[in-house]
Image (tube, rainbow, N blue to C red):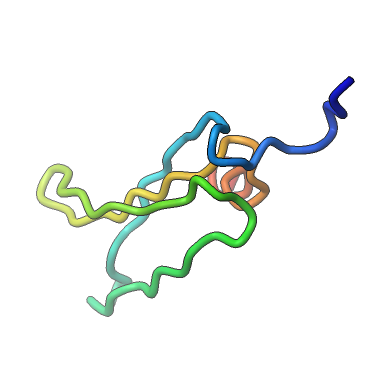
Length: 71
């Protein structure tokens, strides 16, 4: 029987995304580092309503993703 308390952060895990600003208030680009907590992490640059955003994809059980969506 699988341990339900263990987060599913494997490549086959369901994923979710969060859009983050690509630049700070002074126009400096944010650095992007790979997530060390989940394997399906990847990022893409998107243009939404004239704003450049970084869309980060994480396993939905990833602690970093949970922090981003709650916070």
